[in-house]
Length: 236
Image (cartoon, rainbow, N blue to C red; front, side, top):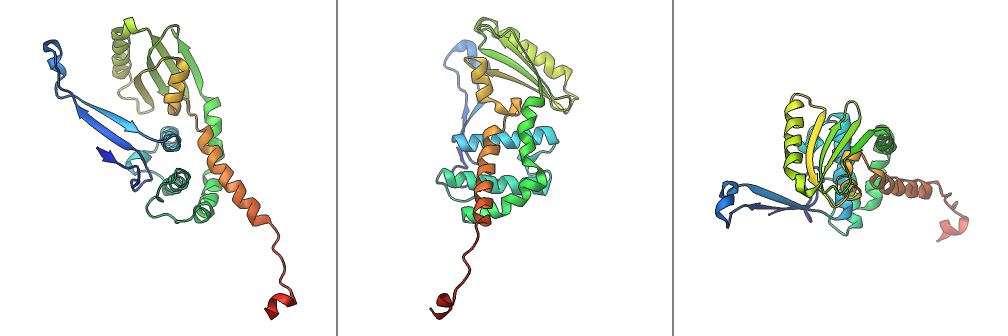
């Protein structure tokens, strides 16, 4: 178990990772012995933060998840993690201010510098093609971040092997294309797929709204006129 829930990673990532190793109890599945599976547990706010990091990494071609990329982006996401963590009632992330006010003071200029509000427009700029969705529970997803195209191919439970084959074919075809991401996913419906994997749809709507709301409140408070001192104040 890797626990980043209470103690965020240096980049601000939070969550709990549970890693298991497979051991078959049936003779016909022993070939899978030794394979590992990982469960990632996150709160809703931690998930929208991780989604935003994925979206920015994909569409700005930076590997922020591995600590690489523009320092302003890395600092922004660390501060945003600390802010969202505070809403969840968790300790502040490392190397950040330890008050919400201090966080927003530093986030605000980065918001303007990086033009964070533009992230919302990404979701509408992507060309989406979704097919064979009737009774689908398995999906092969292809995202071309350069051309901003998303293709989703659905498959029923009975055709899962065909879906695996399709995924393999796409991976082989695009293995030299750094802008193409291929993934196999399962979900009860296409709506659940979009909810579980908002990064493929470039959906950062809630993340942007949360951070923008904090900045707007801070700016509004700073615009309030301060009471001028009086002679009575000086006597006291």
